[in-house]
Length: 130
Image (cartoon, rainbow, N blue to C red; front, side, top):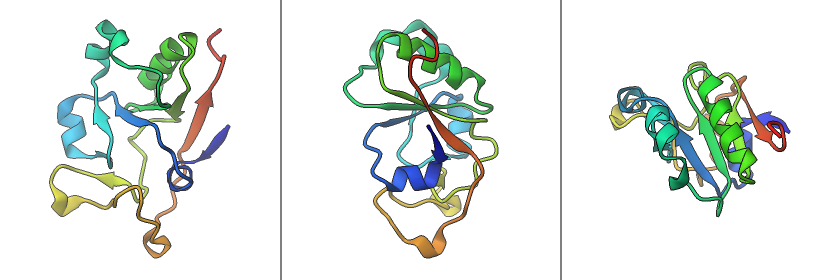
């Protein structure tokens, strides 16, 4: 399954958004409501995430998040990857800790007049790494 990230979030995604980049990269810009769990830390602490809710992972280029999706897919979790990573994302859920540069809104905001289309897609990973 591939779909536009903004449209997909607006359809009611209820899982966790996990940014695998460094805290410094996260602080510059990230998906609104995303948690920062750096790849290098998660690599040694995989058991910290549960499968109670779906997990969407993203990194700068998409390679680390795809690897992480493989770990959790093999454990039976519902996982998604932001194809190509965050570096080209220009959608409406882009924000930073400095709210002066926040383009995004709450995930519950459905104001279509401010929508900025993006080309990146979300891919559901299911059995891909079996």
